[in-house]
Image 1: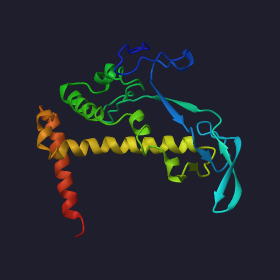
Image 2 (image 1 turned 120 degrees about the horizontal axis):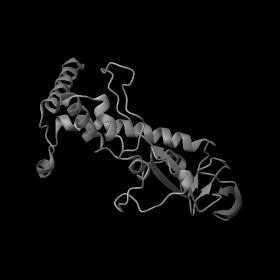
Image 3 (image 1 turned 135 degrees about the vertical axis):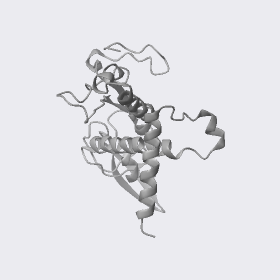
Length: 229
């Protein structure tokens, strides 16, 4: 908090280099390994970089041919991503309607400034409670299907990739992350049908939280009525 490192192995026990320490952000280190795979075309993408020429002998029946391919330039590469959040209250009068961009552990310190009063703060707290249940950037990127590049991968060979593939990957992760936030609000309003999970459900316990759920349910019913059969 306030530029310090969280001393909790639940998060991480990695001490980043000074150049990677940003007091106002959470650091995500994303590791990519391509050991044992080959690239059909050379690429200079900083994360997927494969410029090491390699010739593989391929056998097709009695015929023998050489296939030109490329290996990754290193056994593994790391992408460092900084993640910051902020809360905004567009109904607030004045010049400051948003908290400063900050790390997850620090953002709560300024929420009261842009959501003054109990009712306003309860709304922000409900949003924060739902938002923290969504997958983190690391969870999205680390899922088995988290890479767009996999769409061009087959039998140990990676198809051609643009030299900006890392940017496409990050954009995709961010889109998934935003969708997961929206899904969290839908799930909160509809609840779970699994009876085993009922004891662990956090139900709305104040006026503002109940209003949120009711407004979502009404919006869902309205869309259902207007939808074509």
